[in-house]
Image (cartoon, rainbow, N blue to C red; front, side, top):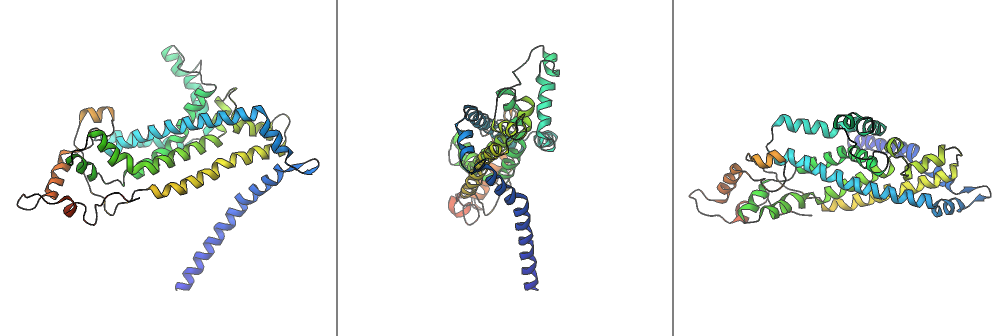
Length: 333
């Protein structure tokens, strides 16, 4: 029976490797070969021409600029929304609405985001007519930034929300009992366990923005990015597949770097042997403006921890003997 199971596992691995080879490895190898092909045979002339062009350098700089900006904003916004769900006591229906609104863009193609921006914030857009003014120039950096944030928000939100669900909230109560300030409490018990996930979120968002074509095609305007350069080289008025292959290989570099960074960031993940259930108290200020970190402790949890820290007769028990014994130890990288 064991031998049969091992045989099935090997068969599954073989099928996965075959699919990977057919749909990913073969096209990449073909692209690499095309990038070195020239009229005189194998040459690096295509790389020299593309990499020394001012237009490609400008497009590369534009892609990095807008991708980094979008990744930072999307990660910050996703953290804000995830914190609202995990660390506040806003109504459950509102939390469900946040979940739905945050992941809904995943169901739409990126080209749709561009059209939504045009019909909402364009000169003849719905919101422009409603308020009597255009909020920002949609064609160029502003439109790309707005579209990319919408595009990458679901990925960042799901990553951060999932990790927040595994953070032991009792540490925030312990931090308060130990006399930490609200800001230090927030940094040590919320931000620090999320450092690896926040970095991974920014890497993922950057990669998605850098390689996307749908949004630049609709609202990019004259703000060239690497994806539009690739399209113009491959399917423009004068197609050049060899030069397009060079641009495609350049676009693969961020993906390789992203995979390496994500693998490296795994070591910063926080793991707990036990997660304690902690109720958060109501706070109108915190729950009203969805602020993170300042009021994330609850009176109920405070009393529960105080009971845990005291013996049956009320005497004080050492923190390490009661709370951190076995299950609730300090963070381990």
